Length: 379
Image 1 (cartoon, rainbow, N blue to C red):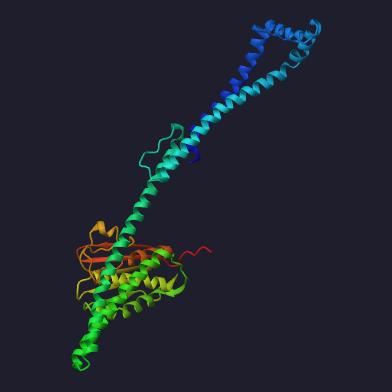
Image 2 (tube, rainbow, N blue to C red):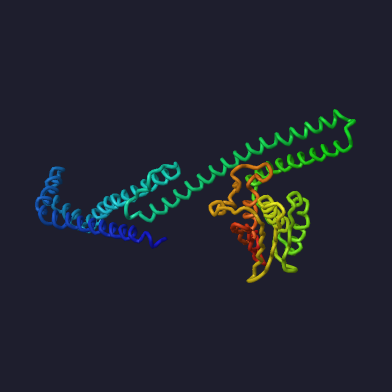
């Protein structure tokens, strides 16, 4: 970037040399041409006359003139050139001060969200480009923050509304069970089971509230150790039976044995749990979710494949954004906080990995690529 200011440096150098030369030539011209040339006799006569008026004789006045002006000619030349250089230097510095004022005004415009374009003199074009880039980045981040805040507020409203439904049902069924102690055992079991389902859903919604708060108030910190990724994925599949059975789905695991990785087991388990829940939420009933893991080239690739409706490319590009949900029409069962995939992406990237998604008319795949030996955290 330093080379971008070559024009400015060259201009300042030329301006400084020019002013120095002008100061020298002007001083030399005034002293040698004007006073030693054109005004030589007149200037000398003027000084002698002034000294004579002060009471000196003509001879003494001429002697003092020679002693003061003729003998110290070089000193007068130096003083004169210094004064002239100071004047010319001030004129040069005034130009620099104008540059700084213009830059300050443009920076103020950037910080105040002014829509005006950054305008600086041609020699400050690199600075203008940098300020324009900074302005664009700040505007982009502000838009993203505003959109994120809007999405979060919408989700809070949705979740608050959804809390009412299961809570009302829980209260209604518990009231009915309390008011009818002689209810038939079969009906009591039925309504107790329904109440438990509604209470579970209420718990999920409350957890989503806490999830939104945690994601915004704290950073994710990794606690790394050597872990067996193969066992982690197999345990995840085994524990998903209850969740998948509701849609008559199954989960198959096809992973290499003893895939070892250096990472945070709890955080990685959260990544894969989020991917599995997302796959289950958007899969057709009675289908299978396939979890695959292979190693190669110093990395481990984990793929979650589910059978469900195709995700449009535009939505696929935004699927890892905070508070983004694939379903436009919110569903009480699938419309989560939109944080699961955003958190998964953050955890994967903290491990030095990459997470992507693909989707076609038959399958949707989430691919996680992790380095076997993840980069150590900075202490």
